[in-house]
Length: 545
Image (cartoon, rainbow, N blue to C red; front, side, top):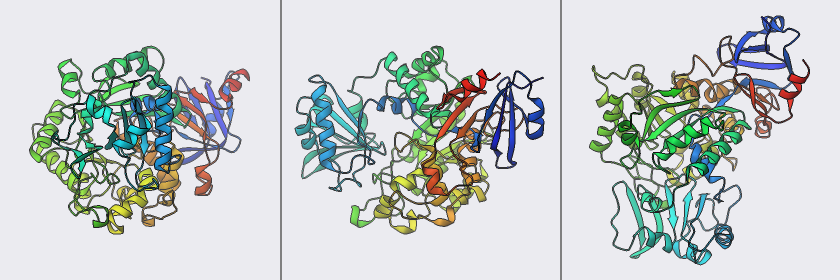
């Protein structure tokens, strides 16, 4: 039985347990053999791929991102800090977008970081008014938990000076005036009056996002809050994307479970846990417990520093309500993927999970997750481990926001946030991810951060939490698969596993971390078939038969 494909000529990372091999054979979309057995399995009709000293590894798994919003955001105004460091530049970009938009059409921007702006604050409604006098405007901070609307947008939403704060949200006022800032669940007031994308737009966005991730070495990804952009229509859009061949990645889907989400509507429509197949699986429900540490809305026991205004953040729900939601979705059979960043929010979630764990509905084997889980205590880690509750962190938060954490929280809490090494040493399975579009989806920045614990300004954040390259890739591959009940099929390159493989431009296991930042994916395979091919190697290998 000849192999369909032979990969050789460089190191191939099998996984953390078994290290490297020098050859890998693929047959019928699965890893057939390794090493000498792989070479022996190659026949006259076998395609051959020469790594030329590069490295191959299990394709990356993006365990926590927002794929549809990311795809839609590709056509929104880019305000990310890599390009936008001044308020004037924010307003210039909004003004430029408004000038080419029809009068009255929404102008939407994503990704600004007030901590990186020269003014050190959020834009104001009146500033957006001046930049776009004929259009409603809504811009969202990089964390996704704070946004600023202009006056036209607030009028469409019916928000006035006396509009009360909704549960779990804040409409900011200063000196009795609306600033335009909306925090947490208050953002729904604006989003609910924005026109949703139609199915064709969503399919195009899904396809564009998948194609971009494939170009970075991903063969699996997640949409973490399905339903918060266009409601139940998002489920149909994913089905349509799959039917039209616009879903090259394997997707783990997480329904929006807050009361304004679609989890209950989806349940009523007959959608059940683990519905779908290995290319599009509906497995989990998400509930928000708090906000973000950068946006001062993550919930902590101890207050933020007085220099940034103090306060202990925002709980999305009171205890009894979030505990009831956790119990409901747990008993329905969904995996719980619960957003909690601050230690007080993590405690609230853990108490609710512990209360929901019962003889009739045990936690054992359910692999419930706490998303982000950045600032937690030793006791909270112990309790998570005891019930098999998984942390799903974003190491790149330390790269992009680490200096802001220091400013908001001080060093004692900040330096040891997102403790990747501690989690691994204690036997947790932390699935490295990006939360894109909150952060860049670039996996090489995430790998660099796990290797160095350095921020984008060069600050080292808790060097004892650094990982080896093998450990970092393990967190970005196998751990992600484990959170999705797929570690028996992907996340390592052992015989019988899916041939989901990324070929990188350099051997990230042997080069300096700074060189990792400059690395890229040259080829991404799913089931041994190219879903991204930078140099046309897969086609070239086929022609060489």
